Length: 339
Image 1 (cartoon, rainbow, N blue to C red):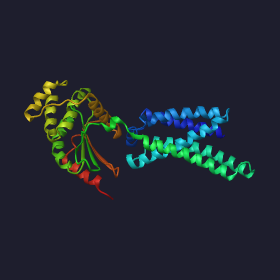
Image 2 (image 1 turned 90 degrees about the vertical axis):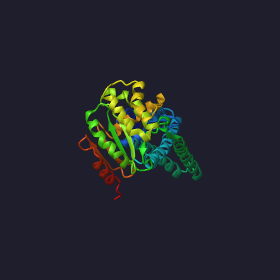
Image 3 (image 1 turned 90 degrees about the horizontal axis):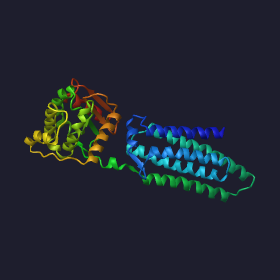
Image 4 (image 1 turned 60 degrees about the vertical axis):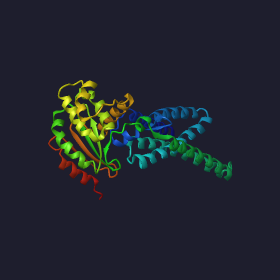
């Protein structure tokens, strides 16, 4: 029965780690968790390596007694590491990733099963006077040390990935606010064009209260041709961004494949010189756009999402009919209200 439970927990843990790596979870907490690495390795890949490795060691322990100690240390070290991962979710991500918690539960179940057997064995030997109190204390200290090492390595080694740390500064408005306004559009979406005047009116108002994030969602594939220019203006020309955005829309009405010369021609009257971003910066910006759309499960444009990172409240408006300054400002007050 014990071997069945251990194998079951190992299999479940591996399945959850694979699901995490394959992005089966669409919750925002899962997306945030994917941005963290341990010593440069994504958490999900560590789980994919740990559970099969632990399984091999467990099977060997059924034949060679020395491996039973190795299996115990692997589980205890992983238990300590999971404490660090849970603290990251609690205090840094501030959301709970269901797959991550499932992996942690699998590890703790393994620790419970293995530790319970060891404790029963130790108590039996103590009663039979095969071990003394000092031996029990020494072994307990070793167990705690392994647990602490696992926690320490994970706590010190867990960081956000380099790609997340070097994301271009494309954010506008009040960057210190817990309120976020995601304006998600496509450069060739007719409804988006209709919503633009209201978006232009709303941005100066909401920028005083919230952080504004313009997101390109390429419902039309050719919209991707405009994203590098849009990202550049968000990074380098925040003060003139709305005017530059209008210029890009005018260009999108004429061509689906803008050249750098054509872009410079339409922005020249604004006394702006186009400054291309590095390839990696553009790639990271596009990745962020994709993750944002996935996090909020956005399928169509235009969409405006008002989100509070503290209260986790959010409101969304879809379509030009509902996207207007009055609705957005009202939603900001509603979402930002502290009950």
